[in-house]
Amino acid sequence: MSKNKPKILVTNDDGITAKGIRNLIKEMCKLGDVYVVAPDKPQSGKGHAITIDAILELKPVKVADGALAEVACSGTPADCVKLAINEVLEDKPDLCVSGINHGSNSSISVIYSGTMSAAIEAGIEGIPSIGFSLCDYSKDADFKEARPFVYKIAKQVLENGLPDGVVLNVNIPKMSEEPYKGIKVCRQARANWREKFDKRTNPIGKEYYWLTGEFENLDAGEDTDEYWLAKNYISLVPIQFDLTAHHMIQKLNTWKLNE
Image 1 (tube, rainbow, N blue to C red):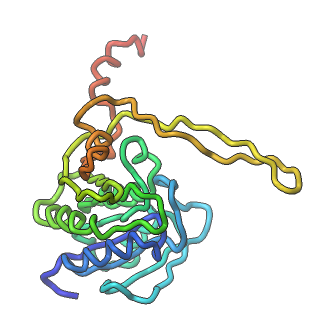
Image 2 (image 1 turned 30 degrees about the vertical axis):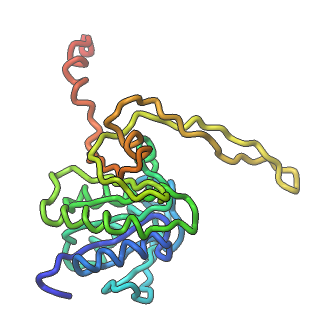
């Protein structure tokens, strides 16, 4: 460990062996001393769940890709960050990066994302944090064109910091024949999933359900993550974990709540 290099915590929700995190580790090793604490198995869609009714295990794994230490955690992405801060690292890291996720975490998906929840958990602890996602769900997704942008954004956060309570959500379009056009700072699009539960029957006659659905963008704005991703730009959305609707407080105080 170098006294002059920043300490960087790397985590994800796809699991410690996922292709995305291996690419992320390599880029972060160019910026500082890297420590990895990530799930021992895929934990996609876990949101900000934490483990309170089962044991948690940490298992050192073979160091690869230049990291100083790697630890597999039996828990959720949020568990990984909590344990990294409280049990694995001697001091808080200077930066936490989560990803690179296999699939989009733009718009409303940020609510469900284990990738972003890990970054948010670090943000709650006062650590500048970024969640990175590649909008490609394929296990053979190609991260090579995304890596220079991941490096650039992380470097800027290390140099400039982030305000308390703010975390960056970065989504990268699926690689195409055209190079990425750049990075756009934007807002989260208003959208949702039109969900459907596919009812099925297993071989012994027991019914079960499989969640399916289609993404529906309800936002016509030209300043959103969905708008710029569709134009082959990388979207960068500053998010906050204070969920208070501050604009509603004054109106609620006009209600007859105490009469």
